[in-house]
Image (cartoon, rainbow, N blue to C red; front, top):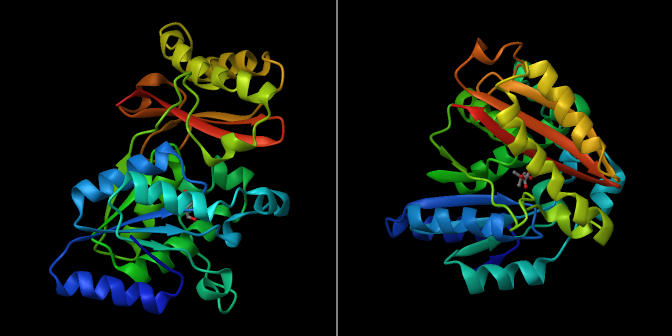
Length: 282
Ligand code: PAF
């Protein structure tokens, strides 16, 4: 596995792979790698012959400077994890100056799917994600790119960007990986104190329990029930819980409004912001 830090080295490595007739997969990450990332990389290695993993904490997608400052950065551990557990070919770990030699002034507009949930609570976040992912797509020009379903709205935004830019890249969704106690695996979990780590599994457990509740409650009542349940566990505070059409990401009023219904949640466990989601029907 090679570690490169410049776009020129990255392009040379990918060009050689192309010359050798290999299919190319890309797994964009912000590092602090965990089993969730490993599952993306291993899926990429099963489906593509040459796999690039990018590790870059992208400043333009953080709307909270503290969040950017405290985001875990563990490059040595990340590269060791990748080389011991995957067949990834290249790690691209650029500096901020390499990716943004000039400030990126591009403004993406994704319409209604970007205005709800994370789009509402983290203004500018998806513009930053689109800035960096579009650059990575230009640098690597992969056949396939792999994204986790934990970031459900991000996946929808990336798909829309690929459609809008008419890129010939297949976006491959990868299922949420969970700890044994149900907590969705996330780089942010390492920031949880023991106290918050012990209550955090109630998020996933409550979402799971809410699937049973849908028989007797409307979507609005289910949102209230989930929010009250989770807030009742000391230290957890729901920022939002939305039950949406899985394609348009717009709120639904009735379970029968659409065939694909997903609940997306953000919860503060102390200062750590956790996200998760559950599919009610598809
Ligand atoms: O999901 C993430 O880790 C990031 O948003 C991504 C896609 C790597 C872009 O920085």
